[in-house]
Image 1 (cartoon, rainbow, N blue to C red):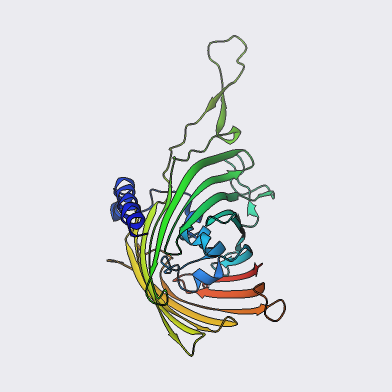
Image 2 (image 1 turned 120 degrees about the vertical axis):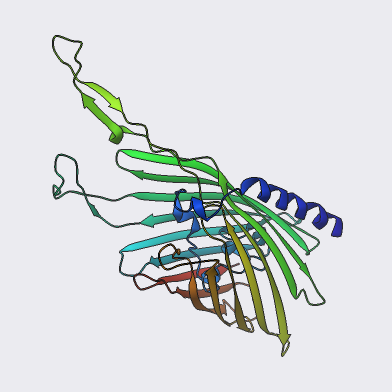
Amino acid sequence: MNYKFTYLLPCCLLLASVAFAGNPDRQGEAGAAQLLINPWARSAGLHSMNTANVSGADALYLNVAGLSRINKTQIQIGHSRYLEGADVSINALGFAQKIGKGGGTIGLSLMAVDMGEIPLTTTDVPEGSGATFSPSLFNLGVSYAHMFENRVSVGVTAKFVNESISNASASAMAIDAGVQYVTGEQDNFKFGIALRNVGSKMQFKGEGLAQPRPNPGQTFEYPITYYSRTAAYELPSQLNIGASYDFIFAKSNRLTVVGNFTSNAFSRDQVGGGVEFALGKNFAFRAGYKGEFDQNEIEKSLDNGVSAGFSVSTAFKKGSDSRLSIDYAFRSTSVYRGIHNIGVRIDL
């Protein structure tokens, strides 16, 4: 068990050192920012600070290694009101399934951003024609995680990222990888590392970039279509390193303290922590805080500040491990009226 962890940890750190050469001077150079939006209420309530102990479908976003920590089957649905008042919503679906008896788990995640209807303007009609369009932001992930002797779990996700409007689109492939380690007499201490959004560049292409121009070399000036070339942009890669500790009391109650450091390739690094109190398996309350290093009011990102949330869970029948849970989270933002997450989880 120990030799596996000793081998995996340096591999993750080496991969991270290769992927990260960024600094705050590169802020704003990456695209596909929806990859940094957490659609799951449980981990959002801790401001995504639970890299070390996230589990199940929530792990599909934050640290895929935690995918393996489910009983058998888990289905999760999430809905987010992003920047309340901006008319932006996010819908997500997560699925996790144990396979065989060897500790393996497969997962599937879908996430779509709805930005509402935007007035259509062109160079010919800059004031708008009355028509509207709706951009499409879509992510699809396929994951696999494996647990070794209930102590070390590792996981990897392959993601397809797509951004499009009716006549232009950009897409990319990305990889997430993560490790979690558990130790202590009651599995109290957990440590996790997750590398996210490492992949190819994105570049918009399509008929929307076509420009007809006259052909001066012909008697009859048939227009020639020229296609503008757009600049390619990187994905918002990041590295998360976290730890957590569980205080167990009254046999079934738990108080968990989490801490996390995030290294962003295209923005300032972040640090934060949180607490989660669980009353048996039926109720949990959580709160967190995350801030940036050397942040200022002009350049700070939205993904900072206070968060809070709760979960209510019930068994389908007495004594059963199958449960239905409802989760909620709120994250404060410096503009608009915060981010609201609500989710439904089914454990079978």
